[in-house]
Length: 114
Image 1: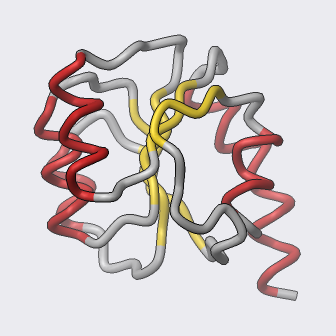
Image 2: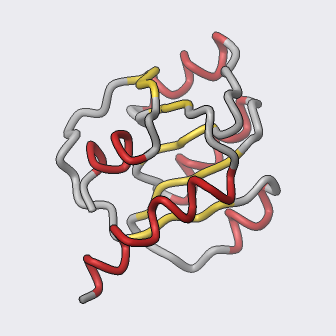
């Protein structure tokens, strides 16, 4: 799936513009615990989370995440937006809950694997 498809499928608002909205996103990690994200062995993924702290962006940078999507209508602090911009990490927000976001992305992930 492409990052722009993810944003569209999740009806997400773009807060920090991606350098390449057509980057391929083969996977996602959904968690509200940063330790779960850090423990993921996936590569080239987006993070779906309800956490709104600067540590989310720092975690995204450490694991090399392609983007961060905040769920449940969460809006980040200005510090979080500034960090995302500084590190070139696209940032989105969606009104959808975490589970529904995952369900909406599942067909796109399966399409990539097929």
